[in-house]
Structures are given as structure tokens and as C-alpha cells.
Image (cartoon, rainbow, N blue to C red):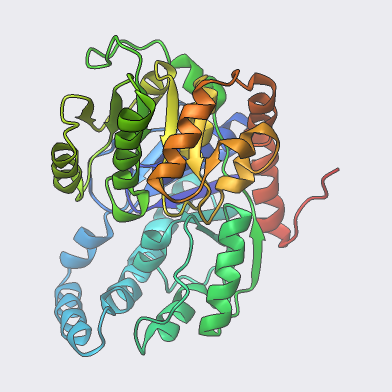
Amino acid sequence: MNIGIVVRTLKIGGMERVAANLTDAFMDEGHTVTLMYLKDRPVKIRPERSDADIRLLNLDRTLAFTGIGILWIVISRILNMVFRKSLFVWQGFAQSFVFKRKIKKIESEKGRFDLMIFRGQGTFELIWANKDPRIIQVCESIFPRKHKGRFDSWYAGLLYNGKKVVCVSEGVKESFGEYAKDHGIIPESVTMITNPINIEKIKSRLGESIASIPQKTYILGLGRFVPHKNFSRLIRAYKVLVDDYDFQHPLVIIGDGRERDKLTKLTKSLGLEKRVSFPGSTDNPYAWMAKAELFILSSDLEGLGMVILEAFASGTNVVATHCPGGVSDIMGSGCLAAQLSDMTPESLAQVISLTLKQPFPEEEIHAVLEKFRPKAITDMYLSFGISGTMPCTV
């Protein structure tokens, strides 16, 4: 089959890695895949397959380089002043037509797409006016519960009414159901299909040499420095470990984002600047995970928590906050459930300390990873996208 996968960018991020993994998964099953990104940003994430077809559609530039496009952009900004936070409505309407033209051009070269998979809210907003029945919209994150403005239900309807919607975890699906009820959304259909993980790809990169990885054993946090990842909670938990548990391992936090200064200031205010390091972003988090004693996820919410699976595939155990979303889909049973903490620094510190004293739960982690093998997930996408139903599973 001929499949298109569409994302906003291919920057370093969990959603982008999943898009690359899904591209590999479909190609490994013999399907033709075009991975398309919409914004002209540096490509940091690529599929493992060297023959993967990656296309920049660059909707902004295409729209801006036409006379009517420039006029439409100006009108859109004026309308955004009248209808708060509506810029995506007006620009997305025009960019949707640009997207359709670009898709037709690719199809003239490669044949008609049987299925197109749009990933993430940012992607939906850029090309929301596409009503093609071949499109599946994949929701990666928990939805806000409360109305924030008088036009929110209208905006939500534009994005989701009449669409085929996939949620990456049961937590996201439940959240979407509440969101749809709040805003009167009626999608065509909704199901849960989780994300695939390319275990072989991860293992192939574990031995890569990275000079900045500490020689001393450390514990690890990793992700974008944004509020819902709550690295402040991790740093405060580490302070509890140092003060109350005589903890000796340093803490390494990989990533970057708008909260970097806030996190470094917090580290200094707690007297931890010699024990907590911030090496920046990396395109190979797996090498860092493999050498860590423990990976910690301290989020307020997670759509799925792919980074947990990546740590497991790297051979490293995980402690995570028992937050809304998909974390409990991964760690909600067996001994792994004991590695979930309450949403406080004190609880997180306690669970970290206890987990480091326990044997590595190799068999249970192996069983978890098997649930996220690519083929079953690609089969689900094909069944849902083509027929609107899911395959039966035993």
C-alpha cells in the first residue's frame, strides 16, 4: 500500500521519533511510504531506512510566494485580532489547499495514497480543512478539560468533527472523549492505537561513543524543558535524595527548551550545581540511557510515555510519576507498578531509592516491549484507515 505520514517538523522530539519509527515499520512490511514535514526547520530525526522518502512541503513559503497568499496572511492576522487565537483557522484554511496541490504532485509521481497519517495538534492546525477520508489524525497528548475562551468549541470542531481519530493510549482516548463531550465534537470514529518502538534500532546505537557521557554512574532525566515535563519536580526529588538518603549518584538531565534558565536557577538555589548537569539535546538519547543507573520521568502528564519504552529497550530501569495519560498503560501492573510514584518530590525520591535496591525486572520489561512491536501496530492502522474497524486480537 502507498502511505503518507505527515508531521509539522522533524526536530528532536518524541512525536518526531515515532513518525520515523512508523515509517520504518510500514516500509519493513513492504509498503511504500512518504514521510512529509510541513515547516522548513532543520531535520534532526530520520527513519532508520536509508531509502525512506522524506519530503519538505514548506506550506508557509509556498503561500507567501503568491500575491493572494500574502494578502490572505495579512487578512488572517487582522482576523486573529478580532477572534482571539484563531490564526490557525484562517492560515490553515489556505494552507490546506496548498497541501492538497502538493499531495497531488507527489501522487502523480508515486501513485495515489491509500492512507495518510497526520500526527499531532500542530499538524492538524496547519491543514485542518482537509476532509479526505483517507486521513487519520493521531492525538499524542492529554486534552485540556475546561473551556478557555468563547470560540474554543468552534476551533475544536474544525479540527475534529467528522475526522478519523487515533489516540496513542487509553488515557489519551479517555481524555479525548471528555474533550469531545465538553465541546460537542462528533468525530467519524475514534480508536486507540499505540506507538511502535524500533528495539533493534535502539540497540544498534547503544554503543556509540559520546564524549560528554560521565564515567561515574548517574541517574537520568530526558525531555523538552517545558512545564508539563516538570523537571523541577525531579530536581527537588534529587535534593530529597541527597539530604535524606545520602544519595551519591549525580543527576544528568538531557534536553533543552524555554525552562532551561528556570531549571538551572533552581539547581543553584538548592546547592546542587556541582551534582546536576545539563548537557543539552542529543540525537542519540539511547547511549545516555544505556549507561544510566536509572531513568526518571517526572511529568505532570504524558500522552503515552515513549521515553519509558526507549529506556527499557536500552536496558535501563525506570521510575515515573503516576500521571494522567499513558504511563499506566506501560507500567500499571506487576512489579513495575511499584515503580510509579505520587506527584510529589518526596514520593518520587522514595520510589527512586527503593527501585535502585530491587533486582532488574528483565522478564517483565521484555513482556512490556513485546506489546509495542511494529507489525501489530501497522496492521491496526491499515485496518482502521481502510475499513474504519480494528482487527480482532486474541
